[in-house]
Amino acid sequence: MKKIAIAFILTLLVSVGSFAQVDRSKLPESGPAPEIKIGEAETFTLENGLKVFVVKNDKLPRVSFTLVLERDPLFEGDKAGLTGFVGQMMMAGTDSRTKEQLDEEIDFIGASLSAGSTSISASSLKKHQDKVLELMADVLYNPKFPQEELDKLQKQTLTGLATSKDDPNAISGRLSSALVYGKEHPYGEVETEESVMNVKLADIKSYYETFFKPNIAYMAIVGDMDKAEAEKVVKKYFGKWEKGDVPSFEYNDPTPTTKTMVGLVDRSSSVQTVIDIAQPIDLTLGD
Image 1 (cartoon, rainbow, N blue to C red):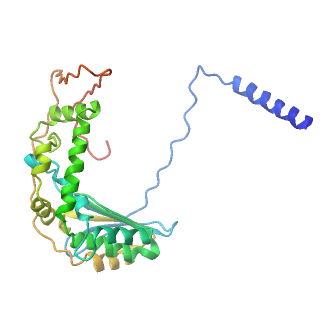
Image 2: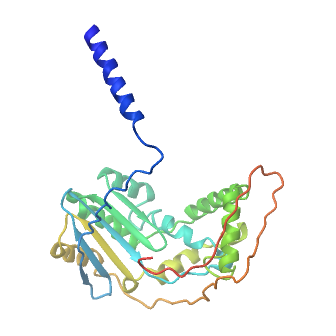
Image 3: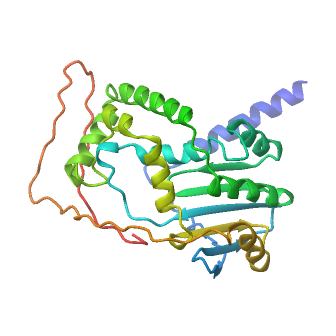
């Protein structure tokens, strides 16, 4: 035991001595830049216009599917908040499955499935890919849009809006967006209690029927699947998806200010201040 204790003390002294020799007046030299390896994508397009990108990665027996809609930004006006409901409403059950049944089937195979206003994503083990694609296609083609789910989502959103009124960061974010883009721009409009409650079930259905079209969509497949197999499964589950006309929108781009402008929200009871400095910049891919 004495030998072990002495060895431990010597090791500690050597460590301390080495630690003390570090020159902290100089920054350590940078290491080599990490090498980013992105797999080469193979592509193909279905007759309905759906563009597909496949990146094979068979290190793990998994595969993921991400469907994305390329639509223009949407100004929601007096129904601001509408797009925030779309994905959750699509996941609230289909013509053949309730929300509970859908969740149970996803959990049973250890998969994931989610939807948004411009996307649907799914992931599973390779052996369960047909099942998860069946569920993904069911959500895409047959959403039920139950009224009770919309009622619940609206109540939850109202609670969130009430909470955000006392959140300095949320207040500052809304103000900055409005000043930079203007309230008549999709990126500058603000959800309110009134706009959220203006959203009706018909609005959700109309959005779905208008924008969920294959000719403005692409699918990214990453995992244990090659192009030949991808063509087979995508045609099987998404080949019958019917294309259609989708409206486009244009908005005036915000211009950089030539002078300093200050927007102030006075909250005299606050003990701290949130300051945002914002300027519109036209970023392009690679910036």
